[in-house]
Length: 247
Image (cartoon, rainbow, N blue to C red):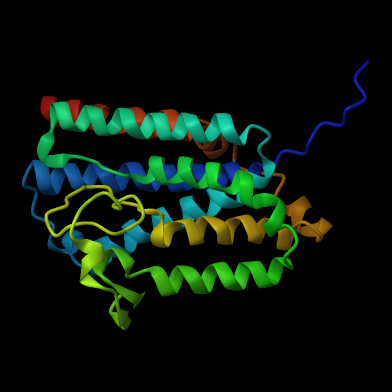
């Protein structure tokens, strides 16, 4: 007889992840229509499309950081994500060089999961609210690092030295040359701080039993999608392209 108590399952988190995956598939379908098939949709290349894209990646990265606390195999999970990111880079390089993906979101999630392994013990000594506020502030401060400055979106607080942006050896961190190109670019700066905010957010929620009880139910179809988010991410774009090719 096993004495270990089974961990509660939070269906609402799977539901939210599933909703995010559905939104991502729809967003990429529009991308294929607009940029590969020439479908006219000016709004997609303007701020509505940008807000749509940001809502997906913000939610997914924050949720991934939150769920790090619920995983027991951080090393295995992180290596799988980094490996899948490398496969996507190789596949786009071979099949569609113009749509090359370097340091995409899977690479970010994998590296973030791995980085938290040695940092976890020290970070747990911080008050959760302080950690959440600090991670959020660092994310907003580092949001412009890939564009050469400290600040958020159009708010430039401090220009970073141009010497950091002369080669691509540090592109994984957010420092890349002017000729660098990636259709899905998520460097550690600033995105690791958003992942870290999710990590602290779970520690903020944990003491509240009623909040945890509200997170346990979920919508079954979206829960299924959320539990298979990695597989769907890997196969959805090739399937979309085949579909549009037939159409």
